[in-house]
Image (cartoon, rainbow, N blue to C red; front, top):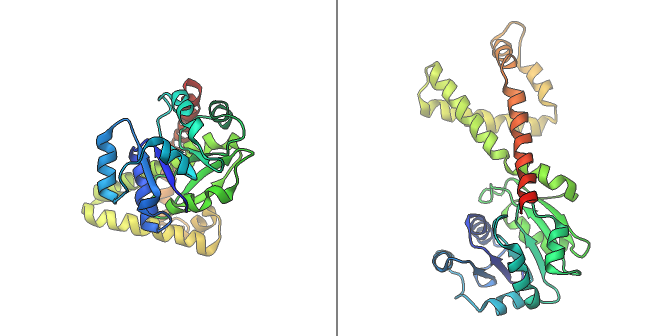
Length: 267
């Protein structure tokens, strides 16, 4: 992997750096940072053994990948105008900015620059989870693949699906954590200790995922296998079917997708 320069050293940039170093897809000397907060740069430089901060222009010129890790509400136009003259001929710009389209990025950066729009997953340290990626006409998967696989799996999508992926896939762990918390509380309510309930929930979750992978069956098929006539399981499902569980989860995903689109519109 050639040099990677991060513009914005926030939590996501740190998570990517940490995971990439652990996976061996980046070396500390290949990483450079810039941020409006010098204390943040000093902290990450010390924490991960990065090289001393180079001049911004030198770091940009030497970078094969320039990662935009700023917020949607930040002044992207000023950032683009500053970095544009210093990009090397082979550099690819990787945008982590939610809601900002390839067209807007190309308008600000200039034509002919390879741009990858990436929505990173939040499970970076685990090796699980997909980052959603869409490429402009000048970018190729070979330019970004080794970088992206340092912090999870990669799902290439047409841009029209990126906002949907953000609200569904990237926000996905939120729904899982909420389910785990609620299911654990149910075990405590029924009489188990929290430690016991937590362990049972996590084991059930891991085992159920593995059953789906191994059997290649639809969840409904496994539900049918798991429920005997007039048994315990079907009585529990009856109550769940009478709740707002499924529709509430679906509304949550749609609300997250809607918010992602709003971020892009107000940028």
